[in-house]
Amino acid sequence: DQQVKQNSPSLSVQEGRISILNCDYTNSMFDYFLWYKKYPAEGPTFLISISSIKDKNEDGRFTVFLNKSAKHLSLHIVPSQPGDSAVYFCAANSGGSNYKLTFGKGTLLTVNP
Amino acid sequence: DSGVTQTPKHLITATGQRVTLRCSPRSGDLSVYWYQQSLDQGLQFLIQYYNGEERAKGNILERFSAQQFPDLHSELNLSSLELGDSALYFCASSQKLAPSSYNEQFFGPGTRLTVL
Image (cartoon, rainbow over all chains, first blue to last red; front, side):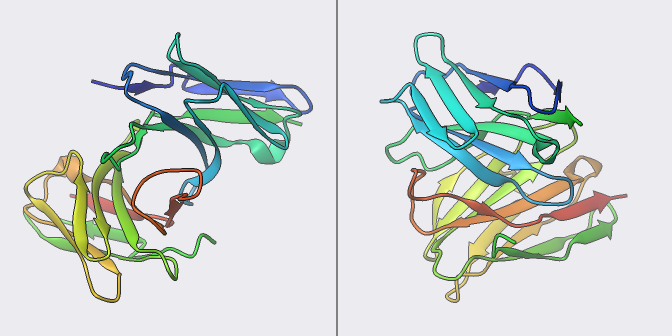
C-alpha cells in the first residue's frame, strides 16, 4: 500500500523552463511534507518542506504547493538548470508520536541545456 | 558532504550470511534513521534511534536489527541474508526526534549491499 505516490518516473524539460514534479498521498493524517533531491552515488538532500497549515512555501527557485483537499503536492522549479537534473523524492509525516517519513518512489528530472 | 558517514560503501556477500553496516551521525545529532532503497523503490523507513533508544519502527524484517551506541554511532545488522535484501541502505541523522522544518534529516552516501 503506497501512501505517497509519484506517478511520473521521469520528466524532461529545457533549461530555463519550469519543472513541475507531482506527488499524491492517500493518508489524510499526513501533515508535513518534504522534497528531497538525490544525485547518483549520493544520499538524498533536503530541498524544501511545507506544513499542512500552509498551501505554499517558496525558497529561491523552488516552490512547493499543497492542495489538501486533493491530497496533492507539487514542486515547481523556475527557472530549471542543468544542475537540477536528479531524482526528486516526495516524503510525508503524520506528526504526533509518528517520527517516520514515508517516501514516494521518486521522479528522475532531466534538464536539457 | 552531509556530515553523515557510512561504512562500507559497497558490500558483496552470499545468501545466509550476516553483515553489519555502520553509520556515524553528524556532530551533535541525536537521532539516527535507517532506510532501505531497493530497485525501483522509494526509500523504505526501517528504524529510528534517538539518544540510544529505539523510537520508531517501520517495515524492518525480524532478521534485521539495529542499535545506537553511547557515542551515537549506529549499526544495522542484517542476518540470514536473502537475494531480495540486495539494496542501498541509507543512514540519516537529525538533531531532534520528530520531523519538522527545524529538524531536517541529513543522509549519508549509503551502503550498497549485493547478496549473491
